[in-house]
Length: 250
Image 1 (cartoon, rainbow, N blue to C red):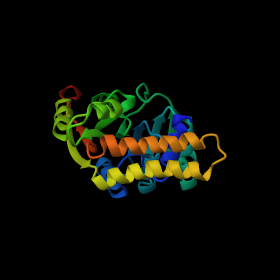
Image 2: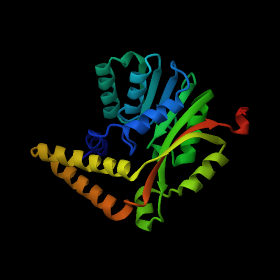
Image 3: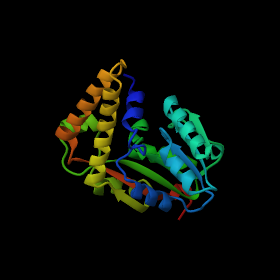
Image 4: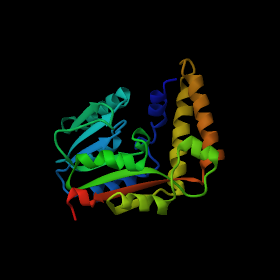
């Protein structure tokens, strides 16, 4: 079964596609949006849920999203039309790491997409050229909350703990102005939604050729979560200002 389709189905009941609850999403966006008429860019937007929430909450805002998944972008287009915000949303079917826009943005966000850039710092490096003076970056990526096993590292990537992650971000020329470490409840809710949505779809579509593979994918994911990385993997979201000397900003 196509990986992009699995992801789309698995995020049916958790469209934000990250282990962050609605209250935290709202606060993160509030901290990142310094002006009501902000121009917002999402690098690796998937189904566009972060941008849709911006456009619903800020009627003067305009948003652009970049993603390689055409099914995800089509989902975002339909959702935007249904919400009446399609005229303020521009979507680009492109590699987010290579995307260039003719203007800069007040908020650049990339949550849960660091793998597409090669890690957290490369994600921030990709965001920096898009950022307008005084703007914010909202980024979300994994951290280790306990010593990982080699199996967990091989499965999820080589993250750092919270303190080390913050040291690396600050050393790279960024100043945090807000942050959120996902709670155990948020992390578990995300995993239950991911595996549950995929399992429910498979059981509800027994005649679909993808039903068996979807059910197997859900079971594999659930076993990996419970046996390999639950209690070890965490998720950090940061709102950052660029204070690197090369930008000429304070």
